[in-house]
Image 1 (cartoon, rainbow, N blue to C red):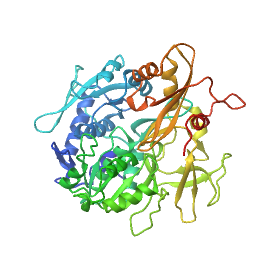
Image 2 (cartoon, helix red, strand yellow):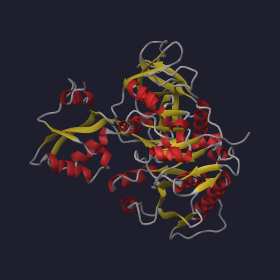
Image 3 (cartoon, helix red, strand yellow):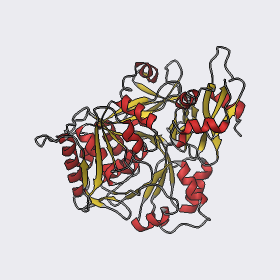
Length: 500
């Protein structure tokens, strides 16, 4: 039986069909994509990298990010990271993944370069005049080495998912996990070779990698990859490339709606559907998307530990339900009580999943694995209800992560940064309501010395990526606690910034 790997997905597309289209830039056919992935994988191998080596990628959206992801996953393990991280954050992630190499654009990613571990390879990736990727490194090359092919069980990708009371957890995703996820997403939306996806999500995120890109390759279609999301150029790009669908977090949908005056934008007529994931889509936003853009809006439910998608509202003519994340896709979904017993239909509990796209466990984290797996089920940390027809509705998060436009932020990480200030005695970060992002970062601090709010914010900005820096800071005399002395973030959030 053929291997269930990312490389196998690239075999679906016809050699001369378009695979990647960068607006104003490079276009690659499937033949060219396969050739470049193989060439770059061999080049990484010649630089001494191999199976099990973690290759950190700090690259903007584009051909380089996609080809390097696939090549790194072929020769070793890809570890894409957010270029917005600060030096201290990069140091943590490099150490946690045990990075053997860092790939960056020429002259960019200064913070990542400063944080590179001792002994790790620094590799610069760029496009030459013919649209081919070139790797530059001071490391010696061994011309006798080549990449070979990965196996189903090889870890293709590692990403971090944030906990609320401990350090971020490392998620090892195997080739077979990602293969299964890409196929599931393609099947869910009946993707075909004539479909054209517009990728507006970052390619260091599971959403952009799997929903927009790998699912497209699994169908033999084409993916259009702008350098970043820009609401000003979004519809011109849709029109120019005849995009048939796009997937985004609700924040992006809301930005597009805010710029819309009620008329259907030129280019929207080619959209077959609009997908939303990574954060809750309000029924009103769904209604506006459909009425203004003229395409069905399908909310999906995903998480990194399941290689992204776990459920989705189906395409017409099947029913799509506002406020529901739809039907299970590629996984079994159950509802479980605290004791580990599965609950009947219509009863609220914790959402649990099983399936080929789901990880077998976090890396080097026995405590998290003990809490997250029960009788072969993965516990998502989300509360929900399944109805008699199998539609899943999410009630709330058991976890206390801050969800800023689909970007999950660990409050503990912000606590730790604030507590490094000599005048801060206690710190508790939490999510505060925001009309566009869904949630924004806020924090309460108890001082033990003289310092202003502005000074604390500036201090945090030096240590955290901008999207993690608290936008609201409450200086309080004491932090509310339970009778046993525990801090409940949601209780702190409600006391300081009650939700409507």
